[in-house]
Figure 1 (cartoon, rainbow over the protein chains, first blue to last red):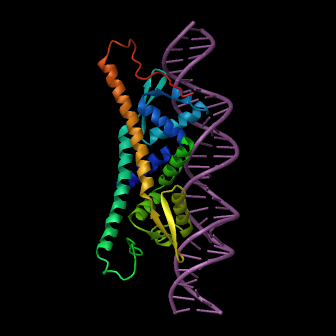
Figure 2 (figure 1 turned 90 degrees about the vertical axis):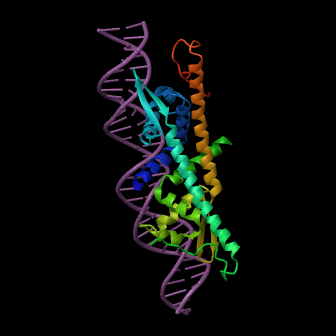
Figure 3 (figure 1 turned 30 degrees about the vertical axis):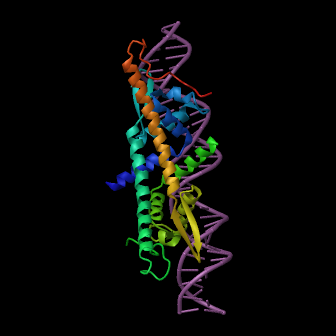
Length: 124
Length: 124
DNA sequence: ATAATATACAACCGAATGGTTGTACGTTGT
DNA sequence: ACAACGTACAACCATTCGGTTGTATATTAT
């Protein structure tokens, strides 16, 4: 179950690691666009843009709908929100560290040497 | 100025697109860890982990501090926050679309054909 | 002094990435 | 009917990625 989450995160972050794909996502979040309309905006082949759209689609950041000969792409804001949630989790880890440091400051006699974090708290 | 932002975003998202790097970032956000302590947690060579740390460092998600023979790595929560801000921007684009659709629903006589978005608003 | 530890970095390798061109096929317009 | 359009996909290519091993160097412990 959590391995699948990591798979999703892999796909999300990878999809967003390319500036063309981020730009495409911005456009399709703002409104539906056909793949060729999108392709007209970039200095690369239609096939290249098509592949970028496919990466975003596979990552679940975008959905495609067929209308006649056109493929209309639309951004999925729910996925963007989930991604934001992951970042929030990272921030909460950091807050945990801060409160731990506060503890140490609050009880200065407990430790002789300044060891802000226990040297290594390996899980296993 | 905005090209540099895109460079930063490229580095951020790329750095986070690997699950080992995300895990490393979680640990160093929660507290300082030496590179070898981190390396002990993963089923790969020290050099591999070292490279992952280097990617995170280059992306500005992590800083290293030298203490004796150890390199202590620490997560940078400000970068994580900036990343969260980018996601929020994407969400705001989506909200813009919704309000545009609301407009269309509110004034159904204004448009003869259903053209939810202007066909292509190329930037240049 | 010597051995063990922690890091740094280069060289290499297979797989994936981001681009290209070419071909095929359904849809739309004349 | 036929040409043009929009899409899909395969094959190819250079570069990057994620891993390896090996070597070098500085620090710490015996």
